[in-house]
Length: 432
Image 1 (cartoon, one colour):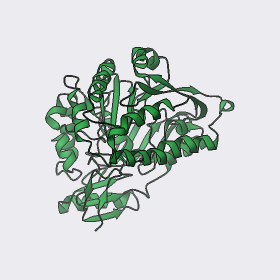
Image 2 (cartoon, helix red, strand yellow):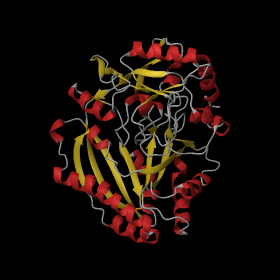
Image 3 (tube, one colour):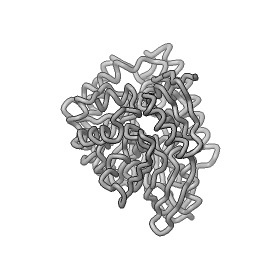
Image 4 (tube, helix red, strand yellow):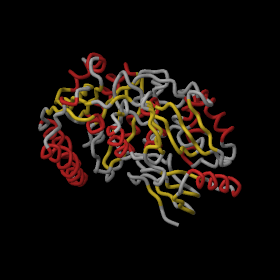
């Protein structure tokens, strides 16, 4: 019996048993036996969620052997992928076949099943989250049976099982609607917060993928604008030395050292942020999409992210700026702001709503609670929806009113997992 903890160290558990499943048949037998024995089963991927959504209580299932491409339909650009495939492996595998995922988030350490099941998203007004790219899901149910959901089989369940929180069964494979491989022309440039917010609609609507990072206690932001290109000859990646300097040294090693130092002397954080923000320089490059979307994140932190109506983003950020200006709390980590199109997935944070996402972070060595709770209080009346894999304090009673299909999902859960084989404390809280 070995302890388990997630990447950020916010959740630790002591499962009774760890099973590395050999194949789908092995997983089916495990689920059936566990149901009969009254044990709970939880598949664990990279553990990159900050919440306890993947916390195993009785049986921890490792899906490492269920990894890689299963099939490719060249006529439709649809691929079946095994659930345990890490995103950083999937990107190159798709490119070798002339394909790409339509959009990705900014971290690629997760497995594909974990990413879609928690509502992982990227940015871009014309693009949904990762789960919105799925056209099929296979999962093992509590009784060991295999449920296949596609546009032609059990199609009415597709909006529920594509983003299931791991509450309906254990996903074994996913069908992704891919697109032909493409490049991203990336332009990263400093700006001020006010000028960015004043022109936010023009920036978001006029760019394929727009996001920005605001440095607390300053008026400085780093904007990121990515434009999709199809001509491979346009590829002009960052030189290796620049990539190592920016991403490895400045974003990870140096940033980690700064956080350790400022934790001992937090009063210097605003001054450090001013220096860091003004040291930002413009950079421009073009590379394969999966290499531009994702960045390395080595410094351990805590994160909460909320989806709100897109139009509310500027007011919330200005209120957050006013609160931070009072120096109630000092923060080194930038505030990340992204955007996504509405979709029809039952538990998607962008369900039937164009959404803006505000993510705030605190270094793991410092107490995050006062900062996070103040941020949450600013969202009253906005029907804010938390990223399922990031920290929040909401339960089923609050979430039910924010998701029109919440009760439909709960009813499906009752049907597919009446004995709650796949539950854990987090799912009990958010789903009831």
